[in-house]
Length: 176
Image (cartoon, rainbow, N blue to C red; front, top):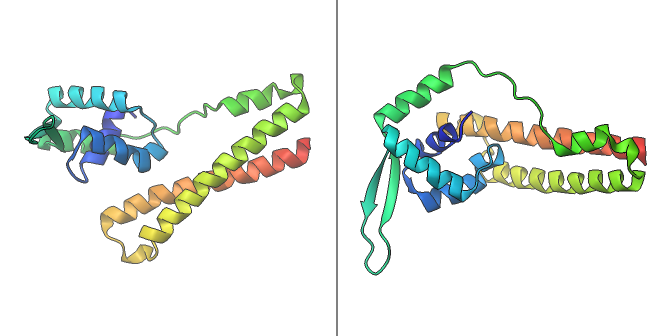
């Protein structure tokens, strides 16, 4: 997946400025596709040049103009085409797994501390996901079609964090 697809997926929901998109990215798509604000702004320019998004300039007295971006019909067609393409499972790229693989050359306390740090980070993210679920997805069968797809993405995140916490517990027991 390219950043372009993550941006199109975010904008297809509603138009927003680059700044608002970056903030939105931090709290939704950003959970599974990381990008800096600079990368997002660069990609917005490329998407506009390809005709996949279009800006609407909002004049703001005494402040710089604001651009609201929305997905064009061409951008929507591209996104639909990309969604229809088969996706292969992504290879795991995780620093901690490389550290664990070679962890026998380091002190056990160093590795245990790193695992505990990761466990805390995954616990925080799981709590965040669970709060989102409680706030927006309490009755899954009564959700709109769009919300059902977003809920499925959230459920994957909850499962992912739950798996990591279980793995961290196992690793701590084995190495502790």
